[in-house]
Amino acid sequence: MNKKIWDLYAPIYERAMRSDRKIYQTMYDRIPKVIQEKDVLEIATGPGLLAKHVAYAANKMIATDYSEGMIAEARKGKYPANLTFEVADATDLPFDDSSFDVVLIANALHVMSDPEKALMEIKRVLKDKGILIAPNFVNHKGGFISRIWSGILKIAGIGFEHQWKEEEYRQFLEKNGWKVKNWKLMQARIPIVYVECVRER
Image (cartoon, rainbow, N blue to C red; front, side):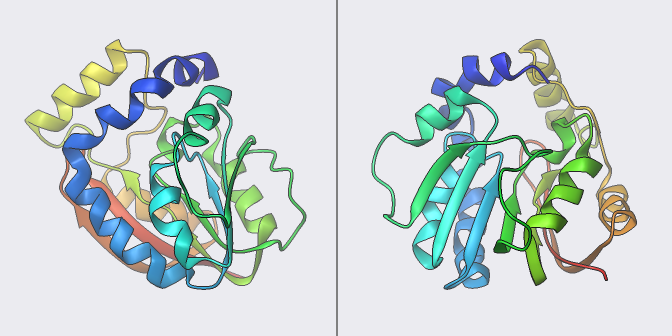
């Protein structure tokens, strides 16, 4: 997807997500327990909402996005001192091998033309026994509200390269070398599967 679309919507992205804040609160409560005192990389941070809510629990956290506009928004306001924001491409990360204990990528794999390449990069920068947290939209056409919201986003220029059903997303991760350890379907305008994985050897 053209990054100019994300630059354009960066100032209003946070407001667009407010109606699903209860779902995101579930992740704000869960993720700090997983990243406690760990080195964390977030990919596709957008305006930094998730990072700002969970970074306090980490040893350090770098939150990235390929949209300069999103990173500019993310750097606004207050956030923990151990959190930094950087522009980076998920398919060509500027980090050394085995740099992070946890990689977080939320609601982004479905908009990437080559999510397999992003997962390969995640494997590269993760340490042995590292954890991937990869919540993602699923069942885009599974209900009336999901279909309407998907249509609105498409009109706005935000299309979905991949529209996985719940089990298809799990199979996609497993096919690409990830063992799913925690899995929970959460009902939102478009359903979200919260998933924690470890890489298969």
